[in-house]
Length: 54
Image (cartoon, rainbow, N blue to C red; front, top):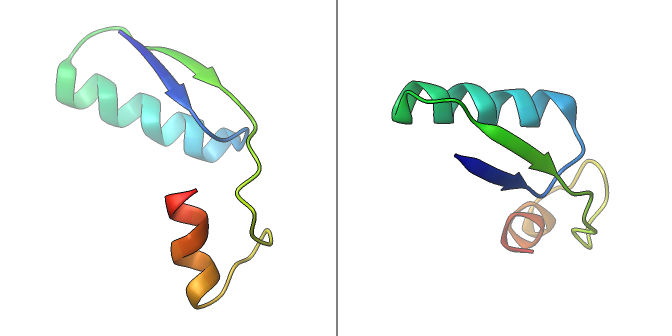
């Protein structure tokens, strides 16, 4: 299975890999793509939701 992750964060990439392997039980090929979420690195309040939706 191929999965694209909109983050270059190694912790997030590993979390996605582990969840997909656990749920689907097969080898997962992860492609990470650094994207601009339009919010600060540590978003607060409304920026948290905005970053998640971007």
